[in-house]
Image (cartoon, rainbow, N blue to C red; front, side, top):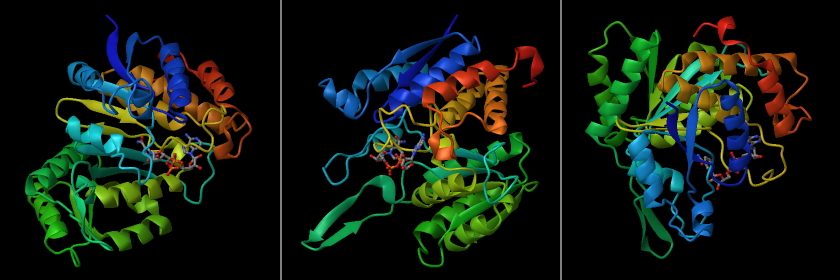
Length: 340
Ligand code: NAI
């Protein structure tokens, strides 16, 4: 029986990186029936709303989706499709593993951390309005319930993945009530995990510490806006937006997607790096229990980037998306060569 997985190619470089990813996943032999749906601008072009109800129904029914980036035009009254999708499916966990990749030269070696970001509230609740012309107000929503559930997810993840240390990132010295509540909820959850080391760190200090020595961190846990910013900072530590995977997870569905956006500057030019989406697909394969296939793809990425001959422009190479994809497929180890 093939797996039914919803595929949202997105727009910009989305169709290019999803096509490359599907090719590599299919080369592992895992049987997947891809149920393709447009979303965002691609849906509007087909006369549908940005989040077509049949697409949401498909993700709810099949529970797993692989998603390419979706453009959000600035200042056109177009609400973010990405935020809308997370809200509609209550994908409250944003999980982004950040790892040093072989052959990708960066300032720091041995980065191995995970960023957990609360995905449904904070300033991204989207509650802002004009008070009087020239004055706008944006509301930062923090609830005890949402803070506790993201903290619980992060602590459970740390427990099962053998991670030892959780850093809760905040700015409670200034946002005493909102960040104070987030911190308090994390402390309450932490009390159930006395075997994990927990520390609290102001966001500004954390940003500096990440740049100085990211290897000191293991799991980072924070509210929405801080997570958005710091996770991009973290991707810069290991080679940029083209190489960092991500997942948005709720209790009933999970959507796997790269950290980067639709990169309109290179869209349609066969230049995009599909690694981030491909590694997101590896997270997806593990989510459905196809651990060996995930590992085979990770080893192929390691081999191709490690050899340094075939790589896309963002990593200093000259290869096209297609050439890189073909090199990955050729470098896939046999199933017996890897252990999950
Ligand atoms: P972006 O991530 O699309 O691009 C930033 C820079 O990184 C650009 O120079 C781009 O060429 C480069 N880049 C990004 N991904 C790359 C890849 N895979 N390979 C090679 N180079 C890559 O960020 P930007 O320009 O701020 O956003 C563009 C659009 O994407 C906006 O409409 C934004 O709202 C949307 N976006 C969507 C996201 C999603 O669907 N999850 C996430 C972030 C942004």
